[in-house]
Length: 384
Image (cartoon, rainbow, N blue to C red; front, side, top):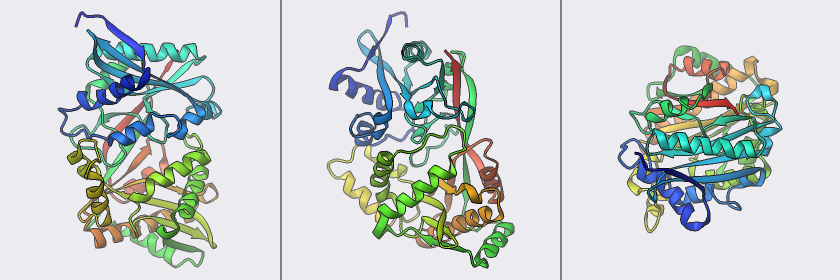
């Protein structure tokens, strides 16, 4: 380990391929790491394909020792995040790093130091990390739950990374939780009572997302999301380009009957999405869809029998939050999704998250449906 570690910016296609390959190689022996689709990773890292680059400054770095790649990191500054109120976690002077992989602690220290240097040179005074890369993608470092694979679109990191990052004088800024629950036997009686009270209300209508007009339906959901989450810690608004990009990516994951929009007085007021966990399928593919894995995946998505489901996104318009209507809308949607996935797809298990540790409303919902925390992610901060 005495050889000098060299950190250099990614430059050109060969370096970008090495940046991508690094994660597959360093995690190859972890049975709970799910190889992401390589095409998805390439899209994430490519300006013109990922709309995040339209409002962000990004630099990728590779660590080499004796000419061999031994780690990677991204450093980035989201111009929209800089405009957010500091009390919500982002704000002026806050930069980020992410997409972190390291062969050992010496490499980790060198990579983090290089990302910090880049952020300082760009005028940043504080770092919030890891974010890979937007807050809407894979925020936080996994510190609990290494003993099982993550569900769809959730990160998985080496257990050693927690100590390596904290050794660089990082403090915990926020904890994010995912909640695990068995769904085939139904929810507690109190949830049933709230659902029935909502069903008696003439103001409330809960309907499934209509996939035949998915672009319109998804736009409704994203608009609610931007309003509902606007006061949350770490919030950065989605741009129109990011909404359009998300609509394109999410459509194949939308299972008829498993996604809900709730209306109050005839106007959209809340939504909840549930996606089948494709990760067990991806583990078979080794990160590649070609030549035939894309067809296998699309065929499986037509009828994901026995699949677990994850609820990654939900929101209730701000004007209804902290009212009785909010709990009725939330529990009606989650119960209707439960009924559909259990009855149609023989689902046994579901996951809700991520959820901010101090999001009292979502934590209360998680407690009411008798779910338990199965993974914890941490976002760290440091003054530069």
